[in-house]
Image 1: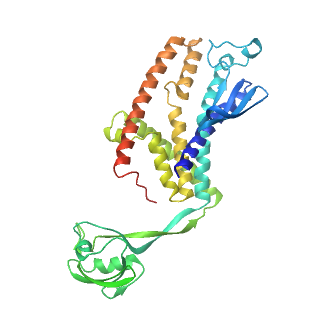
Image 2: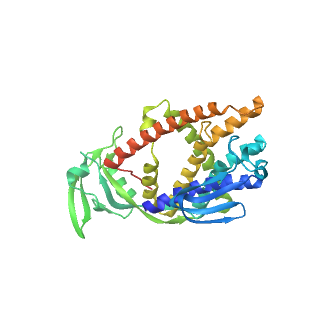
Image 3: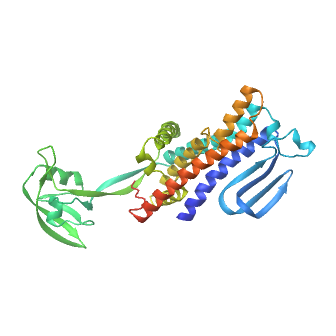
Length: 353
């Protein structure tokens, strides 16, 4: 599961780099290299002017475009095709294309999730948890028991059993359960649901997967676009809260946590995994568009500044701003890593459908 999760996230990074590559090619820029994974190269082949390869480290990929800086020395026949020699609007599109690919891929994954069908679950009479200091605990109910009947009411619908319990607040009842293949009778006293006069036993019932409910293409597409819109807003709010809320910083994850979380979702089914992968792809798109160097958004910002002032920003300013950005990202990474270590040493990453 971990390997699949790592490859999935690596594929998202590769999709991002593919966006830069295709946009650069479309505007006639010279793309020197396009790699799946990172060096050293396991396989490589030069086709035309571009070296295509597969790296030994299967974490995403990278593209090298000639002339990303004006100081780069290039042959005379390449200078006109350098990134820095192209109009600002073309450079902005090339830089933004990576995030655009991640956004489009997220929408596609959300669409597939809805189109292949929403998972449906049915409540069962299997006990998944017993609340502490409840009538169920005092009666001796245990997780994995099956509650077959309350008094004379027998049903495989937990709601029917709940109705019987609600009608007996603070009263004695007889529970019929199945445990390890044997039927047992347990006397129990029903408690009171807080703030009401209804009875409550204090038992949590499990649910079982019964299949997928496939949606029409149009409805799946509408829900996918709605997800992109709503999740984008949530991500921006989460980024803002990182700087003002300690609770948000405690929820931050590093790549280790993201891999651990996504690997857990595979256990719930491929539909859930695709949805989570889409969520990560959308996060990657938004994060990369933040106006901070060395992120794509920072390059877009400096291209806009160049267009406004009519000349490139001095290299030393560019480098200083990049250092500040790298320090900020290192701090966020360390914070997320510390959070992930605490989670892994504690309860772990809990996921429920």
